[in-house]
Length: 127
Image 1 (cartoon, rainbow, N blue to C red):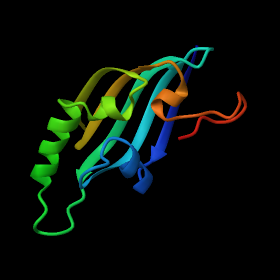
Image 2 (image 1 turned 180 degrees about the vertical axis):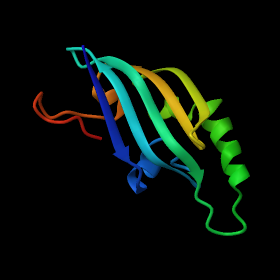
Image 3 (image 1 turned 90 degrees about the vertical axis):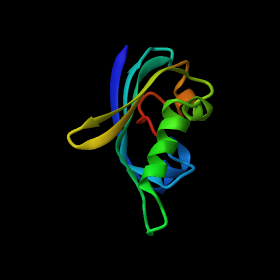
Image 4 (image 1 turned 60 degrees about the horizontal axis):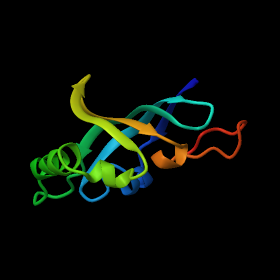
């Protein structure tokens, strides 16, 4: 078993693909902390660091975005729908160093189940 740590810069791709795809929320970056088995299965934590509202006008409400985060992602099934091939063990929101952090504990049968891939053993793991 090998342990892998990956940090992906938060950008439009992250916003569009994973946790915060349907609202005015974004995060600074996404981090994977994984333990990989030889067969490609594994377990780990996907962290969304510095989750924030992307409020661009006075009409938009950061409070509404936070309520959506809690109801749809933390208490709802949006994460399970995003990773249908993975087993979601837990989802948490917490404050770390003054920023909001979301953590998803996950088990997976392959990297594909958590939207990652590796071309061959010498290649890096990519999103």
